[in-house]
Image 1 (cartoon, rainbow, N blue to C red):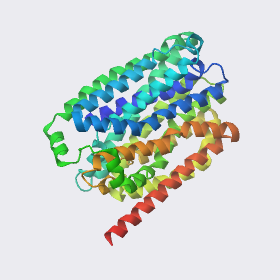
Image 2: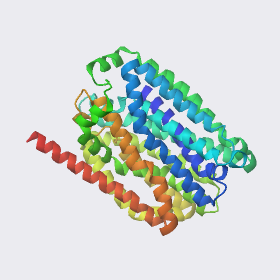
Image 3: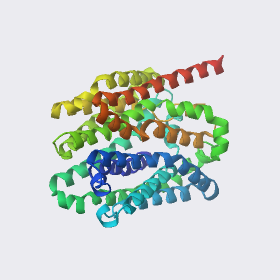
Image 4: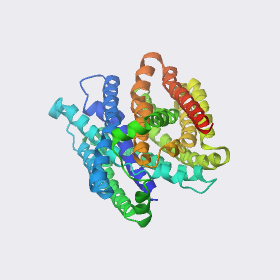
Length: 411
C-alpha cells in the first residue's frame, strides 16, 4: 500500500502538469503564438523533467549514501511538492512577460530532479522477492498508482472545466489541482517515511537490495543491462503518453468540443486500464513476463497502424481509441517495472534499477507528446502512429537481445 500511495502521488503531480500543458499553459504562458505552437512549446518544457530526472537520481543517491533514506525521501518530496505548488502561483505572460516562461521551465526541472529522488526501489524488488509463480501479480501492484493518479487528476480538471466559466477557470480554477498535489505529497511523505523505518525495510537495506551506490560506478558495472532495461519497456512508455497526453491536445486543438467531455472519456477508459493492470498479473504468471511484454509490443505495433485515426471519429471514435489503448497500456504497463532487475548484481541493483527507470521514461515517454503532435499536425493522425511503432520495434529488439545474452551466459 505504501508503494501504491507513493506512486499515485507522483503520477498525480505528473498528470496535473500534463493536462495543464494542454489546456492552460498555451494560453497563460505562450499567448504570443498560435494555440498549436503554444502547445508545442508547452510540450517542450514538459520534456525537461525527463531530461532532469537522471541528474536527480545522481543528486539524491548521494544524499541517500551520506544522510540516509529518510533524508533523501523528505528532500525529494519537499522539492516535488514545492515545485508543483509554486506552479499554481505563476502569473500570466501578460503580467510578467517572458520571465514566466523561464519560471515554468525552472519549476519543471525541479519536478524532474525530485522524481529522480522519489525512487524507492521497491517496485522491481516486489517482483523479485515474490513467491514463485506470483511475480507477475506482485510486479503489477505498484503500477496501479499511475492510473489512480491519472483518474484523480483528470476528474479534478473535468470538474473545474465543466463548472466554471472560462474567465474563472483561467483566473483561479486551474490552480486548485496543484494545491491538491501538494497535500497528496504530504500524505505520501508520511506513508513512505513510515515504511522506511520498518524492520523489513531495514533488513532489505542491510542485505544490499536497497543500498545506494555512486552513479558512475553503477554505469561502469551495469551499463549494458541498464541500456537493455531502458529499451525493453519502450513500447509501453511511448503508448503511455500517446494515450494520456497527446489525445487531449489533438481534441483540444483540432475539434470543436471542449476538453471536459474528453477528460470524462479518459477517466472511464483509465478504469478499464486498471482492470487490465490486474489482468496483466494473472496473465504474466501463466505465460511469463517477457512473453507478455513481447506480445504487448506486437499488439501496440498493430494498434499504431490504424488506431490514431479514431481520434477524428467524434465521441464514438474517441471512446474506442481510449478504451482499447488503455487496455493495451494496462496489460503492458502492469509488467514493465524491473524486467531486467534480476540481472543486476545485488550491490548495484538499487541504483541500476533507478537509472533504468529514468532512461526508459526519457527515451520512451519524455518527447512522445511533442513528437506525436508535431507529426500529426503536419502529416495527419496516422503519422503519430509511426512514433508508437518505433517504440514497439525497440522493445522487441531489446527483449530479443536480453534473451540471447541470458542464453549465452547460461551456455
